[in-house]
Amino acid sequence: MPKMNPIAAAAALALLSPLAACSQSDNASEADGPTTSAANRTLAAAIGGAPDLTTLSGALSEAGLADIFDGPGSYTILAPDDGAFGSTDGETAALKDDAHRAELVAVLRGHILPGHLTLDAIRKAIADRKGPVTMTTLDDGEVTFSEVGGSVVVTGSDGSKATIEGDPLVASNGVVLPVDGFVKQPEVAPAA
Image: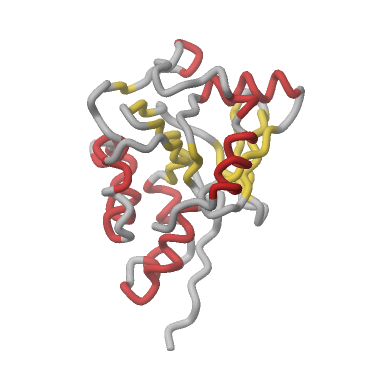
């Protein structure tokens, strides 16, 4: 996976400033709801052990990204659950083909944010700004967090929406926030 341009990385960190209250050493608060946490478990292990994220776990391995989430970097993953992968009208099945590895990586990078963000920190940033908070993903796209009816909704730059659902998974190198859809829709080029 290509490294972020230093200027883009600085810009991404600047966008995180409303969420600065959350750090890698923070534990999820009670406001985050029940959380599965293990100080020595990595993001890859957390996703691999989650029963509703089996398709994502396989996709990360297939795309060659699982090893990154075993490393020291800190990330927040907006993790489409198995139901999200099942509802994309065949696009997801095509993503599993080796010929579409680039599209798979692009979709997954659109669900990864730099840093360690808890659901509580996102809600606080929304409250502090009195409205939506926009952040840059690792594919240089944007996602916007807003609160709708007590739920946090994530909207991608293409207009795709997903709701953060389920228990956040806190790992030693980041947080997994399960979502019920894609915030970046798969776009699979027709086979040649």
